[in-house]
Length: 390
Image (cartoon, rainbow, N blue to C red; front, side, top):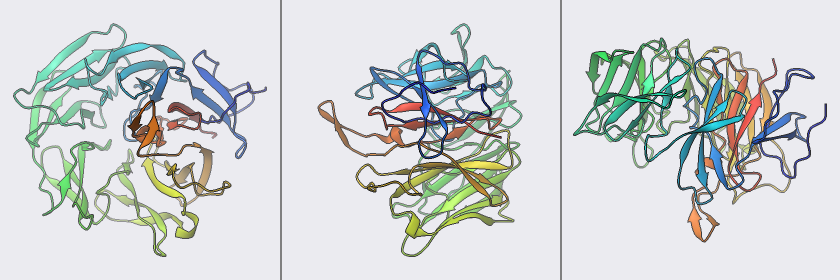
């Protein structure tokens, strides 16, 4: 099997065996990665950008038959949420974000349903019909940018309101309201864009950090308001994730002789151990990374590294832009390169643009067979797929 020609390489695809590659589609280009010998699938939007939903949002639905993406124009305006099949073949647009917010969550049990919002209103949206059912209006309060999340069982939905109160409800009837607030350490401010159900039982997380970064914490609460554990000194900037069996993957920053250390710990703080340590001398071109755990796999998670467009090496050497599988036994495997480079202010189309969405923000599917990530190697931001070899 030969791959079609591709001028530039951006998005990577690993196949399990000859003939196992998903069917090609008109909106995608498949090619090969020269460093790791993997197959590439790049989703194409010739007149704009496409990207995923962030590292902590699963773009796949309950049975992984559908996948979501975000489209924008070349100025990164006029966003819309679009629907693909589970292998990245475009199906149809769903809605512009002027109608419903892109910070949404799929139902864990019904593959046709997702939950989204607009201002103060929370909705159940049916992707087959386009029907949106109003679940609750929180006016005069509004919802915070984190949007909704669902618990492990999929029978409760969580939102926070502009008064910083957490609200959860039983699904599908929106009964059994639970409310609480979190007590943050002194001087530790929350961004209110990442708090969510962690995907283990009914636990909820929130991160915070001070303006100078000297104080940071990640807090884990039950959704009835009891503090389960507070991780002090780490995690305030996010970029971490939780396993379906209740463990936390996080990392500590490197520099001045200190290595990057990726840890896994139980939610109560016990059994905290380093599963990957990288000397800072090998991270000279890495700007940052994200960790993401498949919501149905306990044995591994992914780390997606990325460099700055203003600080790139003359030749490739790890670590730079890899997507790495990190197993909880301490072994690792490099899956692919995103070949992306993030720029905070790139001059394009007559104005300054933040290419935040060029960060790979890699997110695995629930079963761990696919990874969704972003790349700007082709000149625009492209949404990409990576199939994980067993």
